[in-house]
Length: 453
Image (cartoon, rainbow, N blue to C red; front, side, top):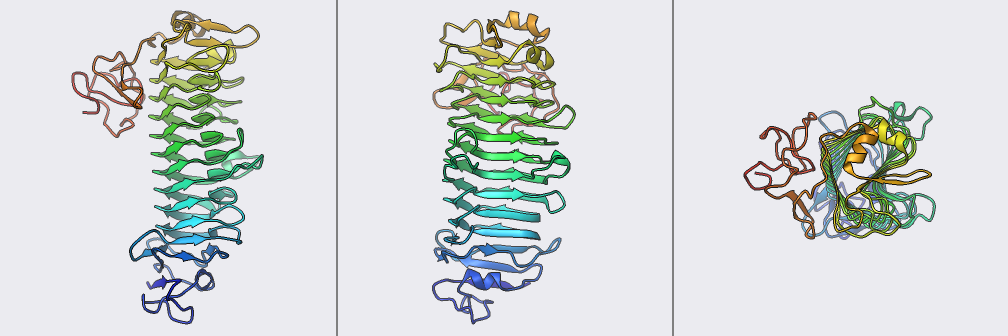
């Protein structure tokens, strides 16, 4: 288990690289070397390495003995600038690697390419790539058990029709998730100001995966959507994320998922997005949508907080707050919009708080579109769906909507207004089970005490 040092200022590729005084100089020297399981390759902080060479993983680690690419010294993260090369980092079918505390930028293609298994990308910065910032693209056999955690990802360019993303996880296959990446976790990342194409660029984009977990991420101003799950996915969990200020959807669930595939979205917060807070697009079936808070979305189009398009069926929507108190563009306002009575009756709805405030449409927060659009009261929605007996149309009494604090104030009608759906912790990590029933929305408040206590 050897530690190698790289110092672009005083290093020399003719030295051993095994001490700080005998450090290597270039990324090319790293790429051309072979390493043993347990080795570490450390780049000096405060320095920028090359501008024409991406870092490539030349060797694999082993279980319990990963190869680590990291940092040493003090100051800013070491920068690897791909320059005229295709990107900043490239692994292709390597295993048991950790890449941490490095800033990647530049290149002529995708900046960080994670090809292999048992890979960890942690506490890195990725920005200003030519295309997508971070990519996992390939079949299950060679793309599994990958963690992307604690990274800051920003300034992905406008793809102008080519589709660039902050993080892309996919494998294009007619078999969908049966062939795609497996057990990918995207957690604790700050992903912002990415993309520019109004329909194709996204903060996080996941397609045809099995066991992808998207959790504890902050997604801000990603164009078009902050998070999009598309294609045919199984066992995808979207939880504990906050998504805001996108001109598109906060959370876009599209594609051909079917009932029984274990896809869930719970305890997320989606607010101030230009289009819907959450979209069920196409034949998006079988999702379980629990305890999310959607606030003042649909600011530039009249999609409202939840939009359900043609063919989205067999989804379960419980314990959510759909709230709006701001004007939107368009002929109508609504908290929930469904394409037709088919989508209204083919999905399961209950224990939700659905409310419009400060609007001529306050009494009719539901809208069934189609050839003859109809706005509906809660009572009318209950008749249309034959459901929602435990849903409410009341102000949830957030602590401070203007300050983006969506915890529930004491006396909120959403306190203990939900139903047990088998979850254990709220958005803040507060354990459930201290009241008779869970609260509606993403935060849990003990009746008679302050939020989260």
